[in-house]
Amino acid sequence: MAQLLEKLPPGDCPRFIHRIIDGICGHALPRFRDYGNVWSLVEWMEVLEEATAFIKHACSKHLSDEEVQQQLDGLSAAHQEAIFNCLKARKEELRWALIENTNSVTSAQLQDFDWQLKLPLSSDKIAFLQTPLLNLDLNVKENGVLKPVTIEMDKEELQTLIHSLEAANKVVLKYLIF
Image (cartoon, rainbow, N blue to C red; front, side, top):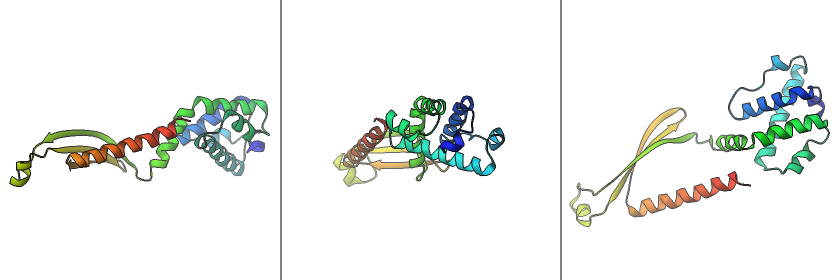
């Protein structure tokens, strides 16, 4: 990557790196026609792939500033500074995008929810026990389609759900804080 990236004028490097980060975050990648005067098509594909891989690696592995600088060894100081500044400026956005991409295998997102607490009246036996039930209505967006999901839970099932959500929250927070 270093040898190819050196072909890019240092003043254009931040724009190029920001466009790669945009692509990782689900926006438009840089276009070959904007850089065709710098790289051949083969070089373009190589520099784009390697720069994207480096940025993803640096962010997903939570590399320290020193480790990032070591990885960029071989580039001019101006190129190193441009890449380093772009990574620092967009670290949070990159982290969220990489987490979202990791979770995109399931590709389901909770869009909205509503809940109700009720006492069942349909069965004499259950009504006699006065067992409260929770109706939880979720609107889940899966593969771009909004689907309603309704869940009915008793107190024990609700506690299990709450504990599962708390555990999931701890895992997410672990990856957000380094």
